[in-house]
Structures are given as structure tokens and as C-alpha cells.
Image (cartoon, rainbow, N blue to C red; front, side, top):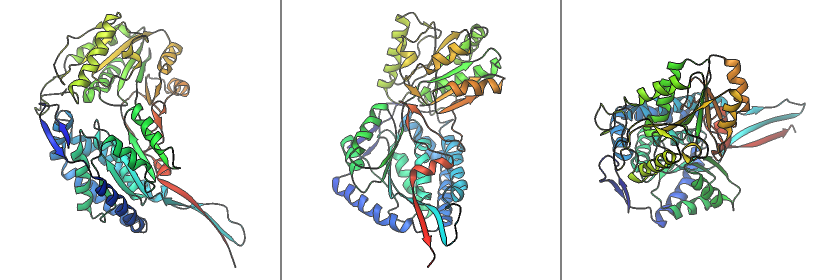
Length: 454
């Protein structure tokens, strides 16, 4: 039996049986059969169905947000907006650009020949989604996969199983044909078997680096694609010409929002020595304003982490850094899954809190002398998801961005996915690209047509 224990009060909030082997077999068979018809459905009709689905999700955002708070702990003042903002924005952008992104690719014609490249659906896409942003992470593959003519099989995190059920409800209400979308509750070994099944044509995985290795290994015996969105240790650099107040406000939020449980959240900050003291002082002042407490209360701005073990891991990193000479600016708050914010200074890259993914409400701040030192430290990581530069000089930001080993470079913002831009990482942050028109490339295959006149 799969059980979801709420971080709010520790009780079992959801209980679902694991899918049986017969159920898995039946769903894989039905998915293939349904996809054969779905791929022939006119694109305009597929888009219309998915637009109705997005509207259904928006209409149900409040109850979906409340159950999301119970499942993973984010304050209720924020959870509905995962659907009303990010989910809806990304979905509608992908649907808007789908006609152009999926259109035939014309090539120069020659006398007596018709030549073009068509984008074909892959077949069945298997999405394995995490709990931290359960709708935002999964929508990146589910909506474009469906609109491209694929069937989708979703395995959601055991922490957020109701999200998979809501996908199913919304897609059914929108008129998606039976069998085109399914969800399963699977154990780890079942996930690996499904990935290896010949009826799976692509795997979209978001999770840990170790999980990514497991997915890659399971798929290694077959010639299928895998998209792996893995960990992050995302840095920010505040140059001497930055708008200090704007940088502080946004970077503290980028580090602490969702209790720091974001792959693209800010986990380390490098500040030019001319601004360092003021930046630290103002950051600590903002961090002190967070209200740790019951996430179902509207005043709460920082809820529990996903489980007590996750909070204990962060506590261990903080304690270890302090023992190595770091200074903690805030008193420890909370117990069990509840953990207050923390800002560390006097940190360096010998400390795990500056090199190992923390995934919690803590950030280390270091002083740097110049751009070169900042770039060296920002690149000193096994991860490469995003990096944020705070400056008034766009040319300088572009020059620095060219030197950074990362999938996305921000200037004067952080912790955001623009659906018009490709979302990708390098190094241990994974591979593949979602969002933008490029996001359709991995969910389709090219078929060339070379037609000679009789």
C-alpha cells in the first residue's frame, strides 16, 4: 500500500494500492491502442481539448491548492498559484506555439520532387514527476506530449499522488479520449520495468541525480530518449553596480520560497565586497520576517519541509558548516519537518552547504573581489541548471553569462521558468530540453518525405 504522510501534522493523508502487474500490462496495451487513434486526431482538436483541460484546472485551483498543501507542506497562500500562474502560463504557451512547432519543415524544392520533413509523435511517453512542484514539473512534458499526438503514462511522486488523479479528472472532463492518459502508483522496481518495456517510447524524469542514473540504466538496453531534470546548486552574483534592495528582496525569496525545495532555487550567493556588508544585513532583516507555522493558516509564509528527514538533512548541513567556521545569523526555529530560514556567512567551498544540494531554507553568502572570482566560484559545482547575475550593465551580464556553465542565465531575476525559453541543464543537472518550441523536438521524431513525380 502506498501511503502519503502529510508534513503538516504527520498523519497519513492519502492511501492508495500499488498498481498490480496485470493493471500495468493492461494500461500499456490500452495506451498503445489509444495513441494510434489520437495521433490521427487533427491538431486543432487536440489543442482545443487541452485548452479546456487548462481551464478546468484553473477553475479547481483552490481545492487543488489545499490538498497540495496537505501533501507537501507549501503554505495555502501560495499553492493555488502553482496552477493559476505557472501551470496555466506554460500550458497555454505550449499550445499557442504548437501549430508552428509541429508544422512540416519545408526544404528547397527541385523539379519533379516534393520534399519535406514531418514531425511524428513518438508513441507512449512515460512521465515520472516529483513532489516539490508537482504540477509545474509534470506539465512541462505532459501537455506538449499530448498535443504532439503521444499517449502519456504518469507516475507521480508517492508524496503527491492526488496530482496524478487530478490530471486524469481534468483531462477526462476536457474530452480527452479514453486511454490516451493514464496514471499508475508504482514501486521503484516497477518504474524500472515500465521504462524497459518496449511499449514505452520516451521517458521524462524529474528528480535526484541518483534517480536519473537509475532511469538511464533502465533505458540503456533500448534506443529511446530520456529527458533528465535533476539537481541544482544554483548560484547568484551581485555585482558592485547592482540595485541592492532589489537584489536582496528577490534573492532571499529565491532561496527561501517553498522552504528552499526547488531545483532552481538560489542556494549560494556571491556578493561584490563593496556591497557585501549591506547585502548581508538587509538579507538577514528580510529573513527574520518569515512566519514559520501551519501552512493552512493565511499568515504563514514558510511551511514545513516535505518530511522530518529532509529537515534533519538541512540541519546537519548547517551544523556541520558552523562547526567548520560558518556564522549562522538566525536562531534555529522549528522541529520535525518545520524548519525556519537560515543565512550563513564565513562560508567556503570546503563546506557541503556550498557544494552539495541542500534543498532547504538556507543560503550561504560569500564576498568576492571581482567578476573573475565570482565566475570561478559559480562554476565550481557538479551542477549547472541556472545562474543569476545582478547588475545594471546588460553587456556585462551577457559577457559573464557566456562564461558560466549553466543551462539558463538570469539577469536581475531568479527561480523562474520562462515558457518561451528552453529549460535545460548541464553536468549533473541533467540533459534534454523542455518548454519553448524546442521542447517539442524530444517528443517527436522526424520523418522525411521524398516524393518523385511519375
